[in-house]
Image (cartoon, rainbow, N blue to C red; front, side, top):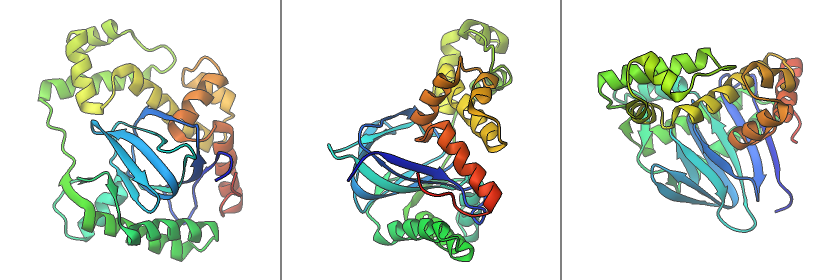
Length: 283
C-alpha cells in the first residue's frame, strides 16, 4: 500500500466541505473533534478509532460516520495501515438535507459509527473523483446524494445535549473566555472563578458540553483558528504565534494530529484552489 500520504483540500463547487484522501500506516489521530460531520469511505486496509466509549473497526468497503463535536481518535487497525477518502460536510448542510427529506427538526445523529453500505461508499468516492476532475455539477450532485443516503438510512437520533442550564451556561462562558484569550489563557482555577463555579464542577460541565476538558478544547480551537488564518494566506509561523502556540513546530504537531496533514501542505492546497478555481494536485 506504499508510504504514508495525505491530501486535504476544498473544491469551490463544494463550499463548506473539506475533502481528505489519505493513506496512513503509523500516523495516529489523538483525541479530537470536528465541527463538521465525517463520512469516511475506507478503500484499503482497516482503520480503528475510539468513539463513544468503544473501539470501532472500519474495514475496506465500509463507511465511518462521525457526528460533530464527538471526541474520537484514529489509527491503523492492521500493520499495513488504511486508505480512505473523507468528506467533512458542515452541520448546516446535513441539517438542510435532513429537512428536505422531512426528518424531524434538529441535527441528525448516527446510531452506528461504521456502516457497510456499498452505495454510500460509492457516492463518497464519486464525489471525490468528480471534484478532482473539476466536474462541479457532478461533485455537488454526488455529495447531496451521499448526505441524503446517510441521513435516510443511517440516522437514528437527534443530537441533543441534555445538560442542566447552570452547567451549560458555565461551560459556554468558559469556552468564550478561552476563545478570546488564545495567547494567554487563564488557569483552571482562574477560569472557574470567572464563571462562578469550582474547578471540578466546571471540568465536568465542560466535558459534558463539548466532549473535552478545557485545555484540550483550547488546543482544538487554536488549530481551527490557525486553519482560518492559513485560508486567508497567513504563513504557518505567523499563525502559530497568533493562536498561542510557542512556535511553528508546536502548531505542526497538533495540526497534523487533528487535521491529518501539516499546516504547510494544507495552506498550499488552499492557495491553489483560490488561485486556479480547481483542485490542488495530490500530495
